[in-house]
Image 1 (cartoon, rainbow, N blue to C red):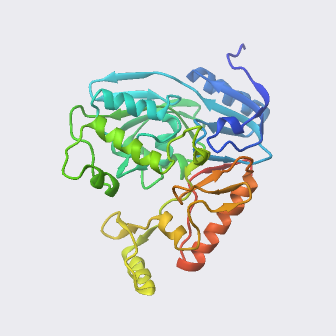
Image 2: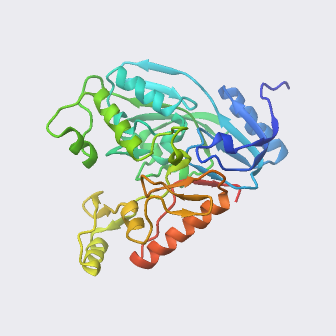
Image 3: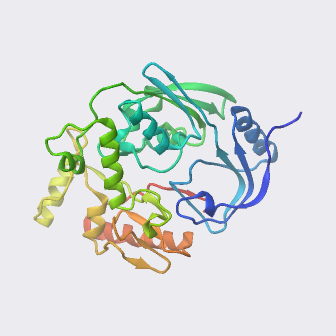
Amino acid sequence: MTTSISVQKNIPLAAYTTLKIGGEARFFVRAETERQVIEAFNFADENEFEIFILGGGSNVLISDQGFDGLVLQIALKGIETDNNLVTARAGEDWDAFCALCARESRAGVECLSGIPGFVGGTPVQNVGAYGQEVSESIAKVRVFDRKLKETLELSNADCKFAYRTSIFNTTERNRFIVLAVTFDLQKNVEPKIVYKDLLQYFGNEKPTLKQTREAVLEIRRAKSMVIDELDANSKSAGSFFKNPVVSREQYNLLSEKFAAQIPHFPVDEKTVKIPAAWLIEQSGFYKGFQKGNVGISSRHTLAIVNLGNGTANEVLELKDEIQKKVRERFDLLLAPEPIFVGF
């Protein structure tokens, strides 16, 4: 049986990531059609290779030894609209998609502008920023089911979205491969302005969706959270740690212990989020902190950056040090956001 995939060997992966770190993939396939995705999985199964799904490389740390299996880059392109429903294939650039929605006055992803990566990665982690999450606008997700060997459509409820989680990275990790995402994006409605930075930016103004997107990009650039080859801080995986979610009781105990009003954001009636950046700074780290060839962004303590010749092992050492100090001071474990590959 003929195949439409091109299998490459010993491909350096650093260039495919925003951290610019990582060894070689033993095998590499770029899939531009759903058929090629399925053929790549068949190739991996027939040869008993492990498989790693690569999107835009913005949320991964690949080991210095690389990946001894098949790296499959999902590069499906195309965007279709049906009234309020907009379907983007998994390989579409996320920020370009946000820009398109702003131009067409479609609300629902304006606060998520500037986040690097592909559309296919957004439902996996339930990507969120500035008071907005993709789960608020996702209608359904088209996937390839590795278990059933067929394509399916999962509803928003099927995905079981929660803070930075979904079935794609928890209960059904490695089962479903995102092929396309359909968003319900209402036209000509007000943007979501609930996050402190945006409230301060606009004051009493009522911005348009386009103005909101531009403000988010400006705020993110000030924190080096927009990929820019000229910015030394942009060789990062974005926010490296999740904001810890704790019970209100635990939060009150922490506040009493430190005799201070610890910054927090409500999640629901029983839990709150504590900013990981604040915890890091209170544990002895600071913007611009360096450890070998890696460090903390000079503009945002939540980002670990590659200072030029950084290695995955150096990133792990800094991650471990940060987690240890925060645990010692606050008895809280900072969970990393990036996916670790090849370790």
